[in-house]
Image (cartoon, rainbow, N blue to C red; front, top):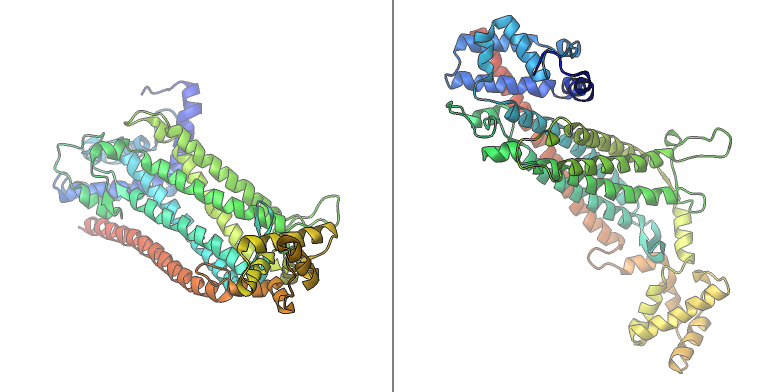
Length: 491
C-alpha cells in the first residue's frame, strides 16, 4: 500500500476499520500476539532474549497508546501500526520475527472468533438472568388462570404459569442453540497462515491452549475460508430475536387499557407531553423495535456472506464483523431490559380470572363432560355446546350465565331426545376446574406445571454451570499465558 491512500478509500474504508479495530479488537490482538510469540519461543523459532524483549515491548503498548492513535495513511490497519511501534523500539531484526509463520488471515480470523465468543457468553449470561426471572414468575402463577388464545381469539383456559413455561422452554432452546454454536465458534484458526499453513515447525495446539480455544479449525483452508461460524451465529440470534419479539407483542397487548392484565412499573413507562393520563409502556416498545433491529443486523450479515467466493475475502471480515458484534451486544441489552420489566410487572389476577370465566374459554370442558358422564360422542357434544354458545352470543350473555335449561334445549335440538342433566355439569365452566383436569403431560394443571418447572430448574442449573465453565476456561488460559509471559520477563 502506498504512503498516502486515496482520500475516498481512507474515509470510506481504512479510517472506519482502524477505529473499529482500536475499539473492539486491540485486547484480543495483543493476547494473540503473546500466545503466538510464546509458541515461537517454545519451538525454538525465536530465542529467549528476543522473546523477552518482544513481550516487554508488547506490554508497553497499552489501551491508552492505542486510544490516542490516529490513522494517518502511513499504515493500513492496527496490525501494521502495532508492528511499526515494535520495530521502532526493537528494530526490524527482532520485532520482525513476531510475524514468523503467521498471516493477517489467520490472525484476523482468530481475533474475530475471540471477540465473538465474548459476545456469545455475554448474551448467554443475560438469557440465564431472563430464565431465572421466568422461573420465579412461573412458580408464583401456577394457579393464575387466564385465557389462552388461538388465531387471536379466546380459545381455552390455561394459567399464566403454563403460558410463561412455554416461553421459558423457548428461551432454554435458544440457550441450547447458543451453546452448540459456541462449540463451533470457539475453535482456533491460528497456524493456518494465509491458508496453506507454514513450513516452520509451529504448534497450532499450543496457541489454541494459550488462547482458551476448545479445539482447532483443523483444515487450514477451512480455517480461513469457512464462514459458517458467522452465518450460524447470525441465524441463532435471529431466531431468538423473533421468539422474544412475539412475546413482547403479547405484553404490549396485555398492557392496553382494553386488556388491562398487566401494569408496567413506573420506572419503565413514559408520559405524554400533552396527554396527562398517558402511561406509555415504551420499554416494551423499544424492546420490540430493538429486537427487530437485531434481526435486521443478523439478516444483513447473512446477506453479506451470500454468494461470496469460498476463500479469503473481505466480505466476511472487517466490514461484516461490526454488524454481528453490534447485534449480539444490543440483544444482550434488550434481554436485560426485558428481565427487569418482567420482574417488576404488576399482574391483575382478578381481571384474568373474570375474563376467562366470561369468554367461553371453558366450554370445551362442558362438551368433554357430556362425553364422559352421558356417553355422547364428542362430535354430538360439540354440536350441543356450539348451539348453547351461539344462543349466548345472540343474547349477549356471558359463559357464566349458561343454564342447565339451555344445555337441555340444545341437546333436544341436536338429538331429538329429552335429557335431564345434573346441575353439577356446570362445574365444567369453572376455569380452575378446567385447568386442574388437564394434567396430561405438558398440560396446564398446576401440579403438572410444577413438575415441568422442576425439570426446567435443573436445565437452568446446567446451563448456568456451562457458562461458568466456559468463562473459567478462558480465565485459566489468560492466567496461564500471563504467567508464562511474566516468567520470561523475569529471566
